[in-house]
Length: 230
Ligand code: DC
Image (cartoon, rainbow, N blue to C red; front, side, top):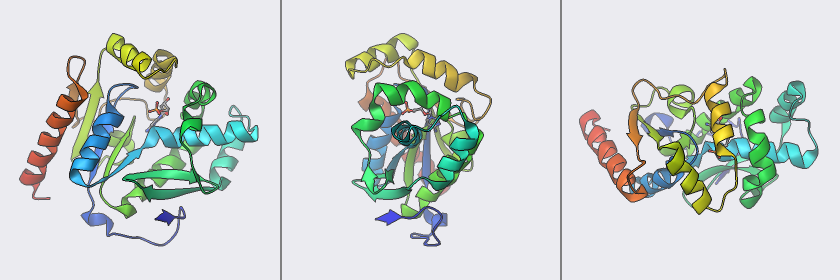
């Protein structure tokens, strides 16, 4: 199922679809817990960080100067990206290709925090992320999902873990990324900085397994769905 961004096809009625927003810094467990919730609930998972990485990858591939904001605006308006729902995930395909390992490279990791704060990029991303709802109910993870992408959803989580625990998790994943620096940039930027929504459930999972955290989140969602009747 692939949708051209901005097309008039609406798919499932948006009003019936739910969104679970999961925000937090890198290695706080958003992806693992988000995929678990999505599979248990039969929702699509959306990794919004992968979308920022895809644009960064595209710019690097094309030799586009990511410090030139006018060029970035032009690029984000015209790049060949489409939303696709496949294997329980909604993601961007670029020129028909679903990007995987290429967006996890050191080059992309080292540049994405310079692309993601640009206002024109965020406007495009938020609009595209909201369009994901046409595929069905979503578990969406990122930095600003509860604050800017779907502020209206009653299902919001903000995951954290101590710096030391997150560094250990990154190393265990084989990543050499300087996530502390990237987290600092995400926290301090003026546009949509990383921060919990006022009504987000905050979960510090420094001392909990991904399984325990996921089970806690699932129980919370199920109880909230019962109380809201959705
Ligand atoms: O989650 P990640 O490490 O793949 O995210 C890559 C970068 O994208 C990270 O520096 C923060 C940024 N990002 C963002 O600004 N807003 C989001 N909703 C998701 C990611």
